[in-house]
Image (cartoon, rainbow, N blue to C red):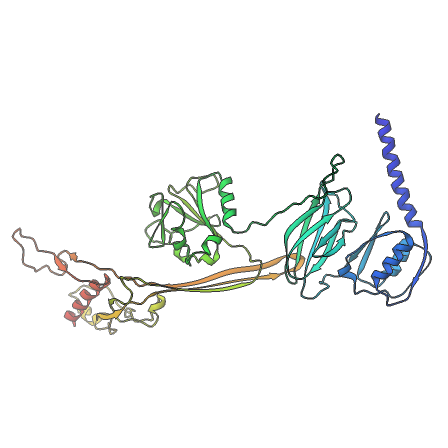
Length: 489
């Protein structure tokens, strides 16, 4: 039985070699005048020789031959004369002639291109497969490659090949002046099934959607909750601090700090793209999430149990912010918002003299200390000299009105095409926010501060100084400084 099988294999191999050798030595006489379209010449040549053709009509429809005259020449030699001086290459495989356009530029200015490779289930190229998209049809060459130019948009693609199941792919995107490279594997049709005429495979690409995030949570080894960019886009939040309060099991403090399952800020860890973020507070383990714009976020995932790939210094939650990748297309977005606080907006405020950059959170030098100050005791004569250097009016209390809150966010993304279908890009965002709140203090008590000569009470102790005031807490300190300065001067 083994010897019989080997005999069939050798016979098949011999038949293939003999067929190809016959094609190479076949003689043909063929002549055409110059300036005739290449497609017409190829079709006429194929009809005369009994060969089959595979080419992209869109690529070579504008090409014209320079004149051909073959006298008793081989097919290979005659094809060289036909394609001489044209940006195409040809390959012979059995009775199939495949023509491939060699230019690197798109044949239709301003259009995009879909190119790819068709193989079988073991990776061998499928030659002569028919690729149909948007009413245009092309065929793969000997290497299974194909290319077709299309206007920018979204298309459905159908691939048909003899002895293979038909493949249909939906939602292929063609971008202006870019090449979308794809590859597909065809399954060989079963000889036992004859009633199946077409197999449709439908797939969509998962981006930063809520469905994709839920699928990730189902497959995750840890307990987690999160929010995706799709959901964030439906909210008025412009920073992650405001977004986190919408995640199940998360509580925010001042729209900045997070509390996970009633565990305070110090028990949680913040990370961005897998890298732990340092604390934004000097003396506490805490991170202020309001400094991250939502325009840069793809998703926020809060893990409530640990896995080996995480840092183990959290007991409440591991908050990971995942940023967006290089954008597929350029974008520029500007968002503006305002807020009204009935406890502060348009209400009376007590404040000091304001600088021209106070609205943006920066001092213009109004509150700067004089240069050259030295630490001295009150009995030192230099104490009074230094106090006179405070020439700016930083001690008078003024009345003003609180403004409504406002925020502005600018997001920018750019992508640039490089050689070999590579690309370089970036995405960034700028956010500025102004909030004005009012804090009422019922009273502030200090010990015998600056009152060592007070009259003792019945128990022989000097009583506290009680300051009753309303307004911003810094007013108390500034009023005491004002009193001290007026006494000194």
